[in-house]
Length: 520
Image 1: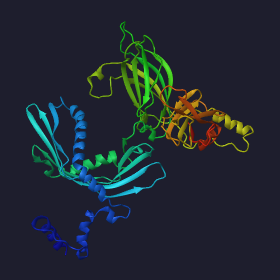
Image 2: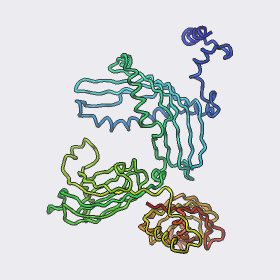
Image 3: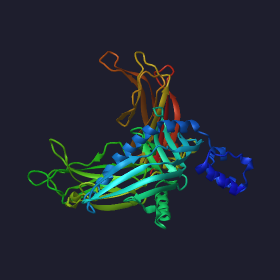
Image 4: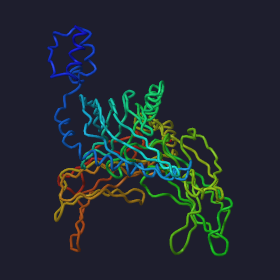
């Protein structure tokens, strides 16, 4: 039966019209040969059939092909430009670039339910395409072509959409990781010859590709794609504080007319949208000593880097950059101070000849203090009286930490003249506010504000007020829709509160606030 099935398969592919065999007439060998081609929605009840999505991709594929190829061209150009002038290369360009007429197909999709504000999708993707990607490399008068064709990719990525937010497209970021090594097969021609036919080379290239892809994207490694501006950094919660002590700089460049510079340092962590922090300006000094301390909030110590930029201050015009350097936070051990003496560079491009110019040095001391996972400030026993409780309060008050205030939203707020609500947060003289939402009685902000404090905010209150504002000059330009004053003692003692508060001076208004106190 098996050999009869094979003969009929050959006959179907090459000789005549297809012959249809009922499954019950095939033996075990024939059925086993077909298993790899059976869609996942047939083999597993966890996967759903998505014929409608495959039809959509098929109809959209001509446009998707052009859009993807255009993106590949724009991304490939700066990479190609790095090699021009090296190894006698005069030019590199795409001679032809198309993904072909065959789109990928999705053999099934499963969706996982989680308790977090995220959506996890796992599609099984197969693409047996007919692309034609040709790269032309010119050496002097010699032109070399490299052609990629007959590409096959089988993979099962896990796509996570998070956080879910009330702003289209309703999620802030997309993270992608592969659950297992993908199957990749392709043909590669060099000067028209199929080099993949060389004995041993095919298997070697296959393993190299699988290992490289696995090292970058196989779970738990992820590819993060920001969707909404300003939310990429908000995906990760703060995990600690970076203490930076800017000590001094040595032998800086002379930028002023009389042979001096007016240097200062700007500091920030990669991936953050907040304004960079600055040291004071040291006038007419090529060897300035600052000895200034700066604290920065860390969200990912494994991937973030500290960026240091030294500028020459000018009263008029743009401040000239004297040099820069970066320090990966992965070099730091928790709660240990480490000193760095760094050579200043023009930029972080390794092959830029401008980086060979001596620009001086900068000296810093760095300490990463992670937050305690369980806020061990503790709860007070009994009525909070007695010497033991007093010692606990003294210990709490002396701790440095980060106060995180998340304004989730409000309900049933209404103004007398207009209802365009935004929330105003006031604490220790610092004022922060959410975005304004027009004509809404139930606004949803989901915005987080951070206050870095040298001591715990015991017996202090934070003032949060819902305001309404409209454009133009009129008598009722702004008005209050209600406010609440929250005592922070419970937040310090318990580490977190998540409550709905009735707004004062509001008929039925309620505001949803979450406050966390993280200590190092």
